[in-house]
Image 1: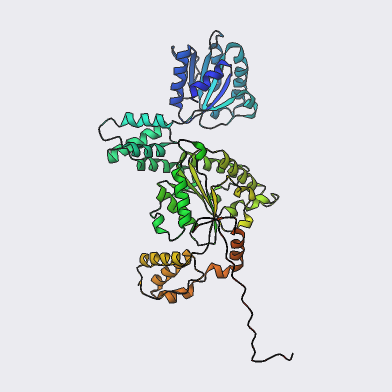
Image 2: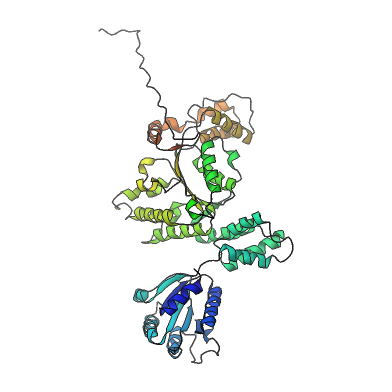
Length: 497
């Protein structure tokens, strides 16, 4: 619903206190002005720079209209009762810390019922004092839709060849979603100066600056797609096919994401980063440590801000690494972290259920026992996928990839890799190149995690068996337990029995 449609309802219902959350004050004022002209309402605006102005007349001459308290008192004469009078206060949240200003505004809002005087505060944030909470209703000034962004692009690309093809234009609009009108104009203008045609890359560059301002998310640009990953064939096909059903036409088909469970070093993080390159989407890395705040409630506020930024960056990949470490305290009594983990989990679960943007969530986990059970239930993710140690075919592909990457001899003997993960194969190749030794000798410096933490790996495999999708082949993962080896008894010295 447009801002003007929502205001029309509220003014007719005589809501005298309206708080509009908007980052585009000029566009909001233009829309309000058009509405007042259509309905023959009186309109007055105020800001600290230009003071109080009434449409159709000169500035109110009270000698102190630039002062917020004097401006409120001067507004008493604007209401007539015959028709509605709208008074728009820009960035007025900066002055509500004053007791005199807050009390005067409260009195005017209450008295506005009798003379149909409507007070509208335009602000980029909702920061209402406790004394005024019951007097205001909060509404949003929505960001431009795809159709409006398309109109902006067509209005700027006036020369032949400046507007991209239909398929390319859809990518531009995908990238521009979440931008304000001014930001979209800047991005389109920058692209026209650079390439003489509107390109999505310039739009993404501008959107990435939003992440630098917040400090809560990182934009990762991967150079490798799925061809840089050996194995994980079923996982690749599953995610790529689900992303094709992006849900633009039907939100019910919107893909949610996957939870990657597996042995450390099997490529969970590398897959999330390569998926962004493969799908043409930016990969946003959510660092849980960066969300932690020193003040009460700051952490939860940072989580909400980060998720709002991810929604604005859609379509994108949102990557949370080792999520169990951040939320493991949610199952406790709150004595260790004062309940911060529980509130973070609640905020994340609410977003996973309710968000309608095209954000594909990938979370990784190494220890399922520390994972809150409510996070892994159905409809949180499209699937929970287990990544086991690569098999022989996948290992050969990984060896070939890293041998070529580190410029090693392809014919040399390789070490015993029966318990190697992809990360350990890379480590072996890197050490061989670093120390200038054969692969077999470099392998002596690599101890697989399946050996150092064999008990944890076996426990993880047993839990995943029958419960998770297999990353290598279609269907449910099934763990093939190794038969116990028989103890060898030496007969060199038979017992006395």
